[in-house]
Amino acid sequence: MREYKMRRGEYLEERIPEMETTVEEYFGPPTATEEFEGSDLYVVEDPENAVFERIVAGTVEYGSKKDTLAVHFEERPAEEVIAEGNADAAADAVDAKNDFLLEATGRDAKSRRESMKRTVEDDAETPDNV
Image 1 (cartoon, one colour):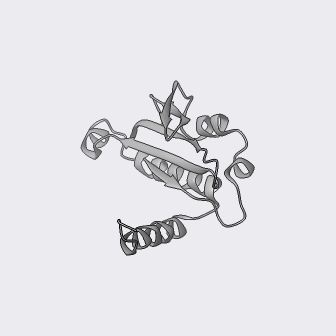
Image 2 (image 1 turned 45 degrees about the horizontal axis):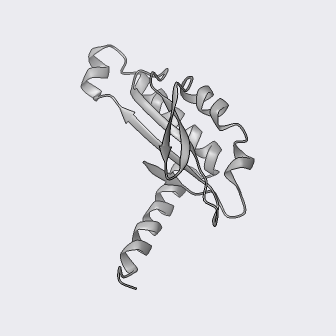
């Protein structure tokens, strides 16, 4: 599960006021919820795009800091997707993921990668026994 932060001064509930509706628009209707870090996330068991096997997405609420977007994309093996004749679905899957994350976070793929790198670097510099 990956968590994404919003840009400075922006909040997830302002960018996506109806998370369930937005998840459905991009990936298909949620069929269940799954608990993560004390928050219920939406589960799409049968996504519309053939590349995806299962998607979990939603808002993780933190009382003391800004809410984050949590997402987990389970993808089918590329060989299986190609064998079924759905190779063109791969590009659509990448677009759906990137468009959803851009709408939610306000950050493009490059900005999200740089932010993740900074988080990993910050974690590496912080000693565990402080």
